[in-house]
Image (cartoon, rainbow, N blue to C red; front, side, top):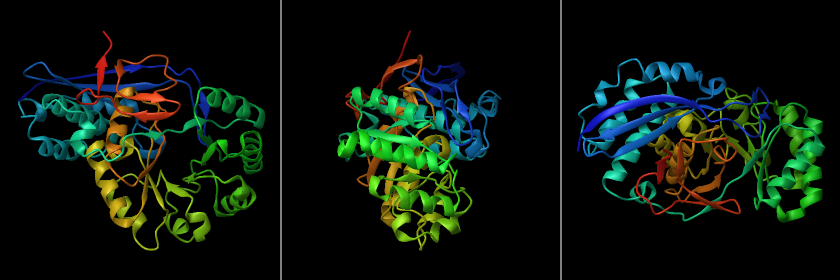
Length: 356
């Protein structure tokens, strides 16, 4: 079954809850979308939203490479030649991981719609459901508590709190959250490279009794040797995020002494499901746990990450809340979520369908 057409477009999906992290404030959510249509009318859907600060790719460059007329290598190719197509996408767009992700996801969706199975089933689903964290940006203590209350009342029990601007306020926020919710709430932290080793050590020591589950990328991404040199009691909490872009990075981080016990895989960093799963295999082989994260994304790519995540027994953490605060989306479906627990549907492919 051959590919008939590839269509590309963009859309601002809006953000009902603008938030601040260590290096920017997010108040709009433009995504790039790819549609791959087969000869029989099946349409595979993909989407991408890069983080320029992390991978050096802007949405403008994503759309530019997708619209420059160089996607002809996909036209008239047989969708059943799945892995050759996925490898070629990675080779054709080496500098644009979000562009690669959009095409990679669309190819996966088209293929598994063609064979009429959910993508997770094709990938070898190991896990039925996991809870996702929901994210609170950098806020003062009172605003943090108010937003936490909203999420708690919605049924979420895993919070990821952005930190990295003021370590003393970060510590106070952790203490107040634990004081208010006791052990009924799991607390994760994402410093987005906002600390150095001294500040990280201070944060760890003063929040040790708060039982923080993990700390994402506490120090600069390039400081891998400093991560490797951290005391084991701190390192066991560290999830590599901005340090982990490619499978090659995964080898570097996992090589003894390991830099972290957790890899945070994001399809927008890796370039899609195919390279994301390569990172996951390296993690599995090295005894590293997996977290699957996201940017602010359409349910298309959030669903893709969920389907991939459920295929690995070392997936322990989901942070796939990137579509929950969108004003609108171009699709419906993709996953079920109840009290924060995410699972796939029984529909084929990604389980998403376009909103007409």
